[in-house]
Image 1 (cartoon, helix red, strand yellow):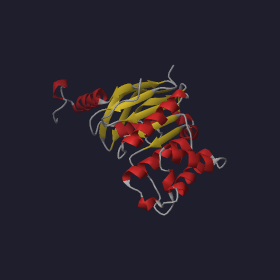
Image 2: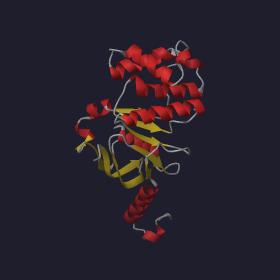
Image 3: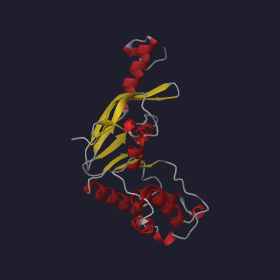
Length: 230
């Protein structure tokens, strides 16, 4: 049974329809990999799943109820890691992560969760280094450590392996597997590389084509002309 699902989702950015008619279902312990060319809406879909971008059509449901019924509850059960690492340059690595741990996971045990998360991502030795001195890969590891510093049921990851070396990638894959083994769920956009074991694939290509056909119909084009300007 799907814990988290989307039904006939439509995404519009500016005045352009990005995708339409997109549906998915994700059960506890499941993983979903988003596939599609650049501009197909993978990042937009992740932001939509996080409650940061409202769908122009369709619905997102958690246990059968729309996530818009209680946005605060949905934010508590989601951790979203996008392209921006959001590392404060003046704070140390530990201070950056502990701030996040306190904000989203509560003050109790925040220091311990922070230390454990840094260790899991292999950046514990950088704990006292200010954020401005981190490399791109180190910043990425710090951003991903938030998943462990403030646990939540659903992880939404936008190309999480970007800038990671082999060691960091292996650590991330192990962390994702452990999260799923405990009943957690993961949705991730990947640009190449192996999918997590047993992960379902959601291709946005058909949804993009559906959006183009609908736009063509609204403009009065024939279906065979959908790829051409009207």
